[in-house]
Image (tube, rainbow, N blue to C red):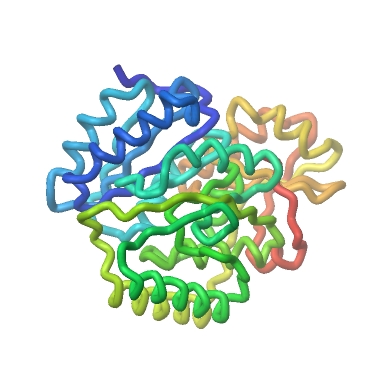
Length: 329
């Protein structure tokens, strides 16, 4: 029976839009990966995010979630797009690390072990079907060539220089995920390109992990229309780049690691991200607004009272100017 996990090591977010016919298959693949030791279900929370589906996705996901030790379904009232669904999952996640994977698990979930291992050395790890040791089977040479051409176009627009920006398996330390998802705005399929470009802007390291991908019948992706929509989203994002402001607290007189240790019991619930600036540490609350933000300020101020924290507003431009930034994780 599913129960809440107080301090999960990993949160796996599974966005789903009209995936009622494929969720069970994906869950079976996740379970096999767990049986083989790639995922520890006792320390992992699974979070299916129903992206305003019009079929029985939410009901099937709830039925499947009930068969895992720590799993739940987050239902979005309206369809936001894959990026919006993953963003909602990140806001709700409580694991030390967070990963997202497609509902059909077309990427072998056994690779989650490799992804989590890579996160011990870098704040961001992304699956790559083109990296040495990775494979991709679209079942169509035309679609394979189209995918490669699109990735080259993305790299030319963003300067990311990554072999596979669109792989549906990506992982982050939770503080990094919260900061990046709060700072980006694309809700469609191009969300992860904007995410990675923002990470580059902040000087955050990105590691590519080779993965195997096999097409699962029934995908809602439109091979021609969706890439064109993604290019439009990316162009608009570059044109209207917004300068997100994060509210938080500034602390001096302690190391960032010691600060994080003091906040560890509260950080996941508060959604806190700690930026290490050497003599100054910043405790930011990327997803907190209104009453939640006020509560976060009160809690952190109480915990850190001897250090006399002061209120601070930090913009993305500030973080980019300080790049490469160091986030405690």
